[in-house]
Image (cartoon, rainbow, N blue to C red):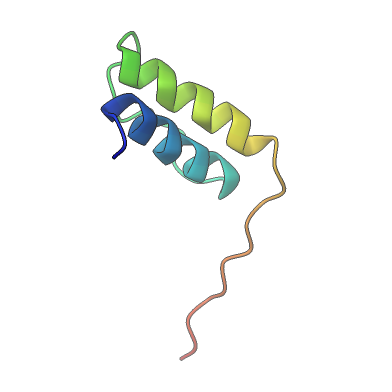
Length: 56
């Protein structure tokens, strides 16, 4: 089971890797906020995920 801090890191990491949302959804000075920022930063260091677009 993920702790709130690990979940925040994972959310930030995914957002960073997908080059999505840049606004931290957590209070910036909170533990979760810091974890999200760290995850986002680490995620942007990886190649961008190629998410296939839905077929129409």
